[in-house]
Amino acid sequence: MKRFFLITLLVPLWYACGNKVNTDNIAVEITLQRFDRDLREAALDTPRIAALRAHYGMFLEYYSIGILHIGNTQTGGYARLLHDFACAPIVETAYKKVNETFPDEKKLNAELTSGFKHLAYYFPKMPIPRVYGYVSGFNEAVMLTDSVVGVGLDRFLGDTCTIYNQLDFAKYLQRNMHPQRIPAVCLQAWLGSEYPAEGGVSGNFLQQMTTEGKILYVAKKCFPKMADTLLFGFTAKQLAWCVQHEADMWEYLLESNLLYINNQFAIQKFTGEAPFTAAFSAESPGRAVNWLAFRIVNAYMKKNNATFSELMTREAKVILKESRYNP
Image 1: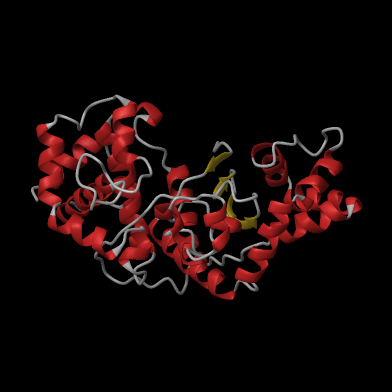
Image 2: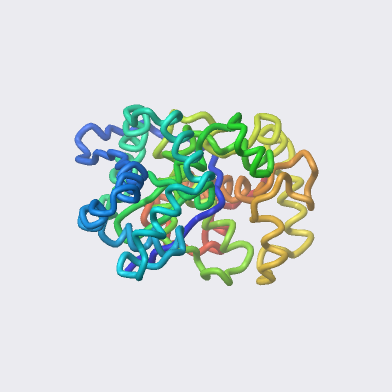
């Protein structure tokens, strides 16, 4: 059973080549439910909390506990605490900005539907989630439950949103905090929850980067028309740097004997959010190793007749060996 968890940082994606697939007959339709609006109405009108609880069930409970930190809906004083959250100046600003940025959901629904239709095509047995939009006070970007992907709309207001500067968000993070990122972020988060990382949080370097590479490969297949820079979250210059220095990055990992280390602090320097990868170059993007992992997975899939489900469960060392990766 999938556990509730939060994703604060955005995980970037990139490109993959592949044949066009027909998803017209896939019975999937994603409609972003505006939990943020329903919650605010209930927060300002206490009797509506019961209806909110009946409609959103455990998502409301997890949101209240994990994001608002006010306990579940049975906690004493819950209505007052919910009201205090909704009326906090920073949250009122968040609601205003969200409503300005997302006056309707037509375009976003179409993109989400297209992406998850492709996911259902490639993974026929995978459950498809509902998608809820929420406001977190500029904190959590994504929240997952067993059946829902929740997206913090106030974390996707656009890279020119002045409030992000006021809140001291780093520029390299702001670059990806725009609405166009939402479909890929939601799909990637759901796919990652359905196929947890090999080795878990203590997996070695190769396992962790290959898990990301798998998700990147599938994500691009699900959004074949999305721009590479948008999908991967790199600037055009960073992307060009990766292409130019692919062999150099790989040689560095091999010569430094990094692939099978389990030192999570050392791994985080390569896989964590950062303005650049210090071991490579100030011109490189953070998480550049995920780009390498994508290249390895892409090479593997070109040489092996594996289904996507088989790919997601294949061991990293097998993928590396059978990819015959040699940039």
